[in-house]
Image (tube, rainbow over all chains, first blue to last red; front, side):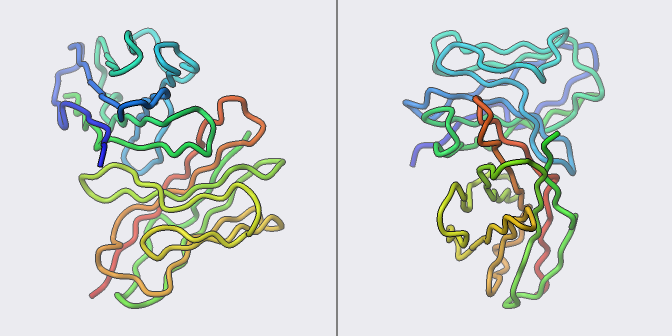
Length: 115
Length: 115
């Protein structure tokens, strides 16, 4: 069964350092999502791609976060510089399309700890 | 603003007992409704969804949910829980009038199973 791949699974970094996360969606999925999940809370959408275009990044802290999906396949989320408050689980999901009847499939996530 | 409320942070249930997890949403129209499960070390998995029609929805793993428009609720139920059901459960809604259909998530309910 096809799965969404994410790496690394765990990342510890010091504040002010740069960190990057990678996501490989299920083949053929045009829509890709990056979420942040703080412990004890539900996921919060950071950015949504349709193919290589950003559909929504209104919740992305653009002074330090960036995301790209250059060829409309895999995607990278970067934080520079990392802050203590960025410690969270970063989830990637993909779906065939944006409409809600297309199920979102989630990867296992990257747990980030900023020290 | 649209919101999703899961009133119970934790629920403890004996194995074999019935389960009901509560979810209430705040939105003017009927949104698209979802329940996801997050097991330790695994990604979020869709249990079931409601778009329209029969207000009792069957999902995977023996779960069902009932949409009650008058109560703005979408509670998740299972007649007999198994130890493997121990996980965190998230209710999510996608406002049906939103062009991006972004999911708005509840804070989750952690299910603990007593042997």
